Image 1 (cartoon, rainbow, N blue to C red):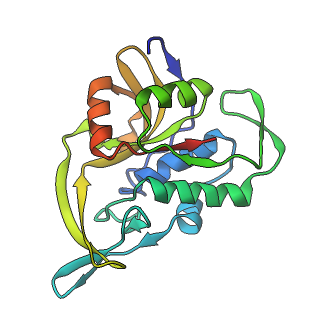
Image 2: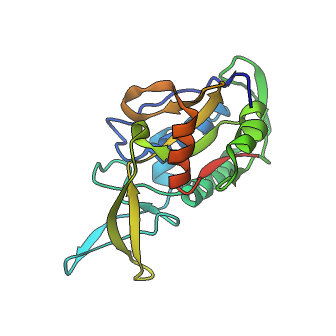
Length: 220
């Protein structure tokens, strides 16, 4: 896909208050773009399922990150969560707050919030689909890759509390908001270290995204 597209989206830095909360911060940037007056604090406290870690008999016990946030986004020693957690949290928020009323969108245009807006789990979708059906349609995408595009690292491991099954985290996991592209780069609102809207090389992004199970969430 050739050309250039860039969606203007409100930016939030995660670094000081939400060191492991990249997934939640990215979701809130999406909500603010849609015109919702929401803070990260409200979203995390009221809509994101979380579960702390616990050390029992020398074994680390914690959440299934596909079901709950593993730890807490304010805790620098926590891990994070996967797409289903953000998908569910966004839909919980939208069910409570959506209404048919006019708003001024971040791009200055007049728009409306509609009660039928829903989050959609796009895990496994190709980049072509994400760009053509979402970015080109002015729908930013919550997108899993790696922090600063670093190499992924296997571990740490823990035991999922409900099932007793071992789970292996892929470290350097990071979540950003995909907002655009050009011929050589994908562009993200990257909440880490106040990166702002930043471009990363297409091929590296695709590699890192694949390692993180090609997870993505947007709205429909």
